[in-house]
Length: 372
Image (cartoon, rainbow, N blue to C red; front, side, top):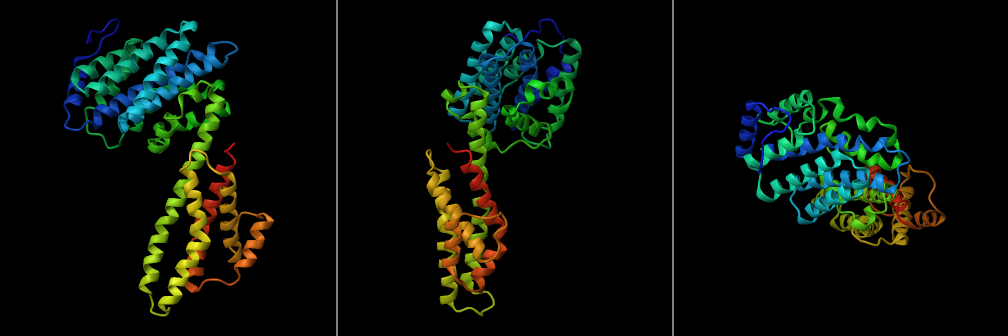
């Protein structure tokens, strides 16, 4: 690789720092440096597009593919995956193709940066690759910005307290983040991307599994533009939120069942405790398991989701713990049919976890609203 600077100077200290980063015993710092430089260049990549009058699908898709490419590259650095890497590479190439008619020079520079990132990921993080990557990152910048960026790069030669990216490394130098305040980026269909980038600025990245799922939205969907992708992401986020709420209650379930079987206090006969467990299974966990199964389906069944929501709401109505407004008539009738079921342990568990059950219902309702 040719790592000779063109129109800028890079200090020998920065070169030494890059060598140190590459030779570190852990790949953490090298990966974090790659992630950081990609994120710092992203707003510069998009800064030319708002100047294009009457932006259409092609211009918006150019930037959309840029966003997907960065998200996928960073996700792949975090957890290597051929599918995610493929999404990153395809998106980079597609953005370059879409930018062609506009003669946006920095698009070409940026895609060169992504391609060099691909090479580093494929060949392993070494000194030559990182130095080449740093030069690709610095080449389009004015000398005063080069100096600032060199300081950022050098900072990675010290042990990192945060992973995968120290927030100070992204937040330095507002020229690199000014794009996100632009009127063009205030549209609702860019909201996920604002949250995504802000997460890195705050040092609290969005959940990595969520990011991976967004990266793997089918390629055909990305061709339909940012508004369509925003709808897909809304469904993914709602599904993901429901999965988290279910997982939280599952953890409580295992603790309760164990305590119930031990008969804490010695006041409940084994038969009553088993009845409590059975009732909770039938009334609460059967509909929750239905919801869980639907979150894992490529084609969720709306009627099954609605039925599960009604049954869970009815259970909360039966114990006087329904906080979310009126449910449908079927749910009211189901609640009446339950009668006075369950012993003290059953009613106690339901009351104790009514907030979590209500959160599952709310998450399921939100997810249902995103399904078409």
